[in-house]
Image 1 (cartoon, rainbow, N blue to C red):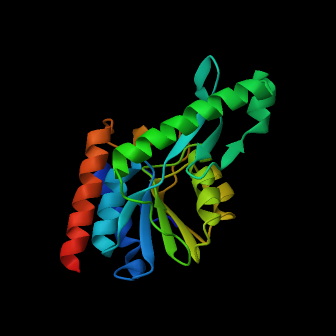
Image 2 (cartoon, rainbow, N blue to C red):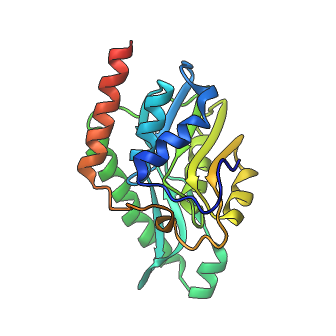
Length: 225
């Protein structure tokens, strides 16, 4: 779904989230809906979506697996629950050994656990079985992180998986659309190049902001009840 011209740039993640929420209005105020945001950048977007829909907000942590020595080059991703996706072409081209892959995956798995504790504290993760899950991020370039999230969420038996993002590369959308029940993307510019190009303010989201937005969302949801 493309909601507006490709030249559109979002002011910031909150602005993008509010626009995205309008495309998801049919999911509003339904007891089966949960919004899961990919931290860190997906959380300000997901907060606005959850707030508009009257849905609970939680995080779903995914980490890129970077090629050793060239960490900016992703060879895959790992998600909460231990789901791992590898880009075999990148692994083969970079000559990454199985032992190196395991070392990177172990390090990133530890970071996933750290972030989950930092963001959620003692609260258990949401029960996704039989629920409609809306996975939110601030954008999709290669889509590796979101694909890992989708695979991990699927293992928990939801009734429906929706991916919703403000901006994404067209090829990534085509790939991901076959893996989810619905894909909602406001713009798919070509060339895409990078997520940050489509935001006027793409400043980094830190752990404290993630914690604050999760706590704020929980408080607002409890008041609605």
